[in-house]
Image (cartoon, rainbow, N blue to C red; front, side):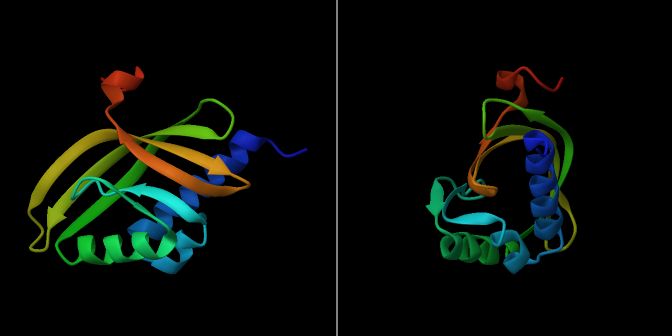
Length: 127
């Protein structure tokens, strides 16, 4: 039987790679149709892959974020907390944010069901 946390980490690595490559279709293929995704740049959440597509398209027209997973911490069944180094630049390349944040993913039937942004300090990780 495959190692479930290893499969989940592989899924999340692929999602980060697709996001950073701006390959929306590849990233959305890793999500459930009713995925819940935070609008970290604007506030609130969107639900569903087409809403995620619209949010990312809008976001990338205004800022250039890059998120690099540093560490993966499997939690309860189907949940993984990812420590992420996030660098956000404006469209001219100026750094707007350079920080470590937490992304908590819920994975259902091998796909991303939800993601939430959480500070690493409250999760017991980070400095």
